[in-house]
Image (cartoon, rainbow, N blue to C red; front, side, top):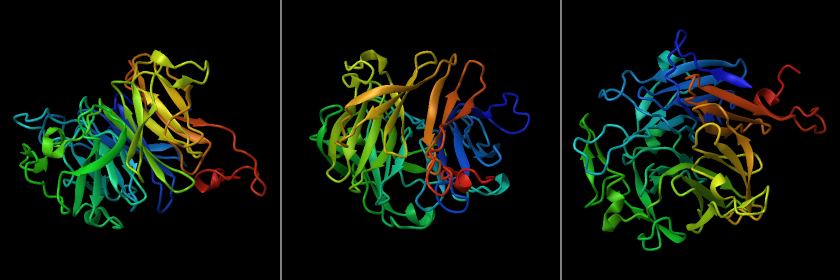
Length: 406
């Protein structure tokens, strides 16, 4: 069912549309009650949906439209932090050595995401290089992974000097950023043994030779697009890395999954061994036929993981062609045995974005219908019947244990 529909007239609240990634307040007071969604527009913003009342509030929006120097553009990422705040970032950055450089490509933290809109505090975390952001993901050591979303670009890791910090000021005060290099770094989208190549020192200061830019607002930063192309910092090129998700296995090992859109691939990275594998591609078997899935599988973009650890792959295609795929990896080796269609979008002009499985209601997921021809973006909630278990009549899921009125 639709739980949010954009009011194109914006009579009740600011809503610039292009709904993108979701996350919920996964920890802390009222955990799981609120769904956060960002606007991927020239005047970006953040909305919060109360999943108890189904009321949606815009908690923050850019004070200006791009390209104004006080504007914020194309929020894409949504990630809840280990210390209980909300991260988003801009999917917009300059070509290497562009003059003048863009002031976008930034990571932002909302330090009090449950506050009233008038009290919301949003901070630019400028220790990270500037890139065109999409996915963000934390591993169990609280390393933060991110990407640069364009062809011939890269996968990054930020390791905080204070990984157990209980606030963003301390977490982002100092730390080291790395780029992923597979093998010698010279083969595009290579698989095999990888290493993390430092771009900064332990305090976040650019290493000698890194490309440092000054944006139009006078802030300096590492150019995360230009620097990994230099021999001293060479990272492995991937064509349009997009979303990231981390899966924790029963043995507590973790795998990072990366969707790369241009060549229709999803990669897995074993974070214990730093081994990169091709997880899914057009050569992966289709569950429906047993044959390679072929051109049906096109432009993988968003990723999501359900309560059972299954990975879902959302395509970036127009409505009528766009599918969301379920990926089967029963032996958890980082290579999918097969993929199968899970949902398809037929809305004219739209694509699906932001698939998110509720961490507190394993029978519930959320997905957006983004930029339809009608301009009425929507957030859709999928549910399946609760499984009955002894002692709770099956109502063991969800905010307030799923059925707070029972």
